[in-house]
Length: 318
Image 1 (cartoon, rainbow, N blue to C red):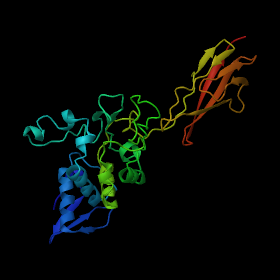
Image 2 (cartoon, helix red, strand yellow):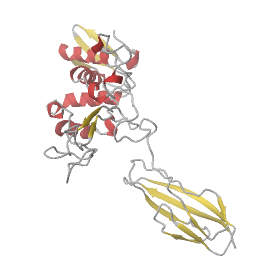
Image 3 (cartoon, rainbow, N blue to C red):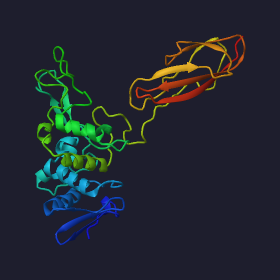
Image 4 (cartoon, helix red, strand yellow):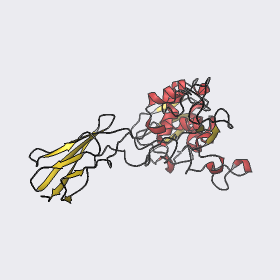
């Protein structure tokens, strides 16, 4: 019986008569040929970080680890670089016992310098963060179909470095290189992997811990799933002037995209004029009556998710 607390005590692998049986409380029993079973077990042995196995197929995760850590050695490119890829005293190239640094494992940030010519005004190619974000999906929340497209075609879904339309400006990639495709990453070779191989890699990446950082990643990518949130201000203000500015700039978008704004007066509220009610900072002109005025803000992100917030202003002017 082989067990690893790093993978969760509910996973067990049992070798009987040369056949590997992998089972879990949520998955049916599967059997594999001796070559595959050896690779699955080796994958679990070499995984350098604890794995979240809840709801996952151990055979896919183990085989994916074998492909990521043994066959492809993805961490060599997708860590922060040679200086931090290994733990102190764990650099195999120094004749030491190899020990991967979990704090940088597959978190990206390795700068391959300006491409295609380090001496020219070209973009720096920096390896991406492959760890799952708050959604539980790897490489910035990509679905399996998106991940499969990346491996099969090399498409850069982040559009990090477009093809230059004019002279190189430090951000674009010059022709004949295609800015729609990932550069440096050896996807032309990975494109020949079987669907099972790609699925195994994807399932393994879903199981590893999230790391913050990486090119184009939003802050707090490992925290609770980001939500679109309206924030209407000023909160509970008392004013004497007849004209003020409302403030919705503290609102946030789950996908980091632009928000649309809609300011209204709730039903039954004191009447006031809202100028530029679809902007983040509209102007309000109060009527003749003193009292508390209420304003409602609705923000909507690019995916159609909305959020509402209220603010009140106590008008004490003449």
